[in-house]
Length: 322
Image 1: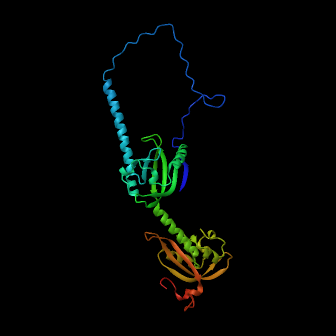
Image 2 (image 1 turned 135 degrees about the horizontal axis):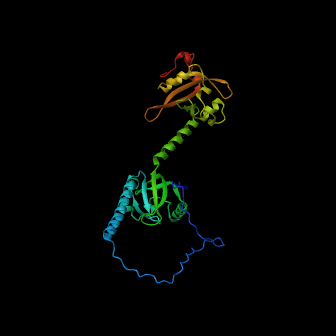
Image 3 (image 1 turned 45 degrees about the vertical axis):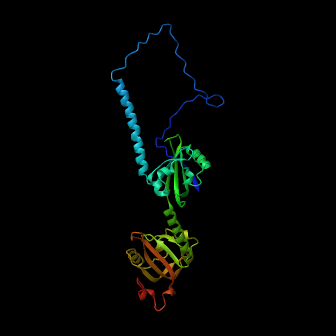
């Protein structure tokens, strides 16, 4: 579990200034009461009770009713806001016992509202114990919010990866805590797949790269860097393909590939020492989940691989489909 303390933005940009007398030792002293005004010798005039103004009682009753409606409206807005949030939200008392949730908590954790009442937050977020809550409260005291990257427990004790933002609110008690939980399990799976693909790309002996629509190299593998004589893979990133392949008609070939064709031919490429190498170049469009072309894929292999039964790939017509 990882935890961060982050400073909140000050929207108002100002803080109230309070003047407090300070003693010689540097400690603030008690406020000095104002000196009373000197009394005069004349006796004060007697105060004659006055009847309340006409209609005062109805006005007071109306003000009390307005205050009640104001609080009721705010409670309704709070409930609507809680229900409309995308994240699962748990509100706890200062000791970490749940006092309110939104509907997303039931979707994420399979607990009903009744089942979560007064439940320790550690039942859902293992590791968020009394010691950690104390540390969280220390962080929140500096007008910061807390982020936790960890795993959550469902009712059936299965788990999911989550990002948890924690802040403070004065709801039922001073210093209640709000836990906003986002399920990032799918993101973690996708990131792991991406890491696996990257590891596989670097493990392959075939030199390969992925380029963007502007024909700049976005990703290259170790085999390509070694083939072209570059010390690091990063030396190839963001370089135009024309740096290594700039034969006549290459720009037209790339346009056709970006239009959806596949292409394969023997070509000459230039390595980091400006030497020309005879290789077989394979190009294919790269598509996103919506089948939209977002770039193209490059693969290099020795030219002899496709020279079998053909005098030259350029004269033998080894385009798409061959």
